[in-house]
Length: 325
Image (tube, rainbow, N blue to C red; front, side, top):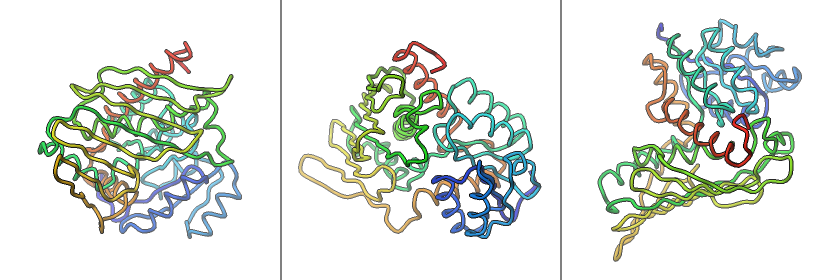
């Protein structure tokens, strides 16, 4: 693809995640938001005026067809992800799609194949994975600073905005595992350098609704992991990594800038202060990959996204007896 001076983003949605993305993109040199559309035209026009976005379209099709858009960012509810991503890719646009990626692994596989065939970039947006702290933490683990990793404990929760109650609707792609699971699975895969090979889980849900909270047990190589997920009550977004020579504690896996490394007689802090935040790091990495002609992220690959989705879909099948949720 011809080298672009500035990467122009089109936003499909006007909700909280859309607003966050716009705010971040305005801070990144070489990026601009050139178009937006929402389910309500007035909401799109309001955000366009507030953020000085040149075009507020009345349909997602217009954004995807616009010659002034290079990348389409999709922050809306899960059930609309596949159709919007396919529309954007078929119109020659790169795509960044908010997690959870798609409702089913087969849809994700189709989208990544389409992007590959068209030479377009496609990625699931997982801000936490691009936290600069984790690149440092990965190096610490690879250097064997806490010996052989034996066990990982991960916790994650999310509050539900009043206008996004679809997150309690399993048919819409809601549920604690759907919404939070892929980010935790992919963080584990990234840090350990190997995919999950065995898994099971338990959940709690109200009748007719998606899981409010769930617990996963995972195995990646010789490492066991326990993952707690909740959209019902708050838990700290934290991680503990246990090795045979020490442990690592991360108090905030989304925006934290430090980790504690403990050994028998020593304790030290691993710092990533003064660097860009995770959201800025993610969009900068996306821009760099697009300018380099890459079709996927080196940090969060298409294979990682698809493997996590396969695990999630299989787990829901075990819980609800329906492979299509």
